[in-house]
Length: 242
Image (cartoon, rainbow, N blue to C red; front, side):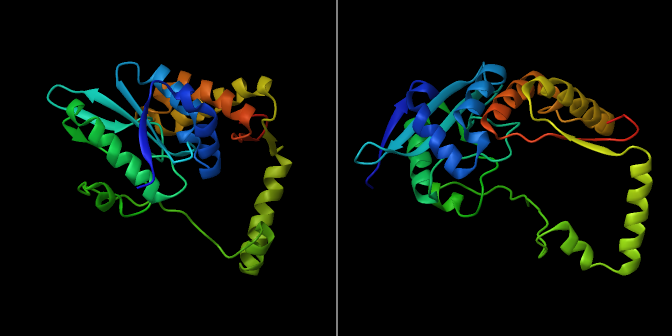
């Protein structure tokens, strides 16, 4: 390999390059901002092991952010950000560099953990790349259509469907249907109040412990995300109520 692995004492040691990799990969849950807030709010009791893989010219090729948690019987190596993040793993522009960095980071920390639990890794082939065992695979479903706009979608539906939809839209408009998008930091707090209220009202006792249960963390990151242009919050109000 043309890469070399070096430990990092803190996120700040490679902040600019780390941030550039996260933006290029479109992974806010791997950004320095997310990782630092996670460590402050959630990871206070974990052992942190950060590694950077650098090319021969010194530029950053990958980041492998690991933490070790201590349970009653075993010590688990996990990815920094586990819990509220929906995509984890090494941060790299290509899978091979990321897998190399992860494999070397696990080897370097082997004495500190008993089992490695790598969750929410995107794509396929990770077990083979790092010499691990695949325990479970979960689908990440999404819907893709051939329509470039809402009007194109409606044009593909039946006449009865379109007429019924327009009738219902008119009724909602008569009741004061309105949409509002949060654009200023001063509007964010109230919008998040609505978001958490609706989340808890919908899910009750099944409300996410990583979302509703980590409200302070989510609110602090939302402020940062709004500043960075990563956050979009839209409110739909009917008769003055969200």
